Structures are given as C-alpha cells and as structure tokens.
Image 1 (cartoon, rainbow, N blue to C red):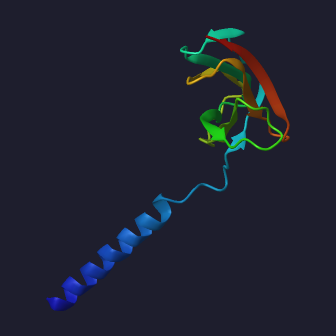
Image 2: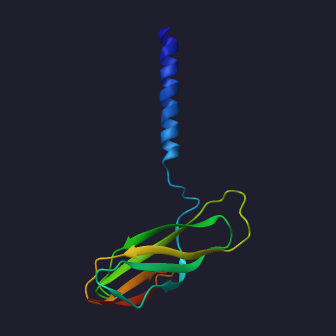
Image 3: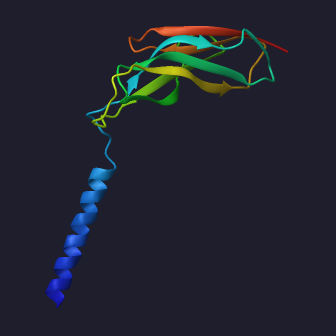
Length: 141
C-alpha cells in the first residue's frame, strides 16, 4: 500500500511539474513584433485638463493570424523632444492553422493621455526599423 501511495505521489508531482514548466513559457516561435504605424490621429489643440485621445493606424500583418497585442510606454532618450510620450505598439502572430488571407489593419487603436502642461506635447511612436514617428498637439490653459 505504501508503495502505491509513493508511486501515485511521484506521478502527481511529475504531472504538476510538467504542466507548470510548459504552461508559463513565452512562445518563442511566434514572437511579438512592432507594428508599422502609418498615421496618428489626434486633435491639434487641447486644454491642460483634457484627456488626449490618440488613435493609431497601420498594417498589422498579411493574414488573419496577426493581431494587435498592446501599447507599451517606452522610455524617452536624450534626443527625444521634451514634453513627450513615446510608445511601442506591439502585434502578435498566433498560427491557429486557420488564417484567412486578408490583410489585418490597426484601425484606430486608441490610447488616452492626460496630465499636461501648457505648450507643445509630442506623441512619439517607435517604428519597426527604429525610426520615430512624431505627432504634436498644442496644449493651452
């Protein structure tokens, strides 16, 4: 009886370790990627108390297995304009085995920004080739 209990315990522990080790790994065969942004749409003027709604447009991928994943707030660097916020916009490819052959667009994914000071505020987007797209808004009191 003790031998059966020991075998069952070992099997349960091994099963638990197997599930834990495979369930939490990042899928390196389908890595995240930066989406190529074609345009940034936002008002040209806002008040300091407003929330700036920014919409992003671009191409995510060539078929239905590509999708928008997330916005990431990227760190500003020394050559970035003052009073700016920089974004990386990530996509993901998930091969479901049933990918329609239709281009997938980033069609107005929106982010809200607030907490402004008077002056020019810049929205920066890191492109896949490392260049930066810039769009600016005038913030008035």
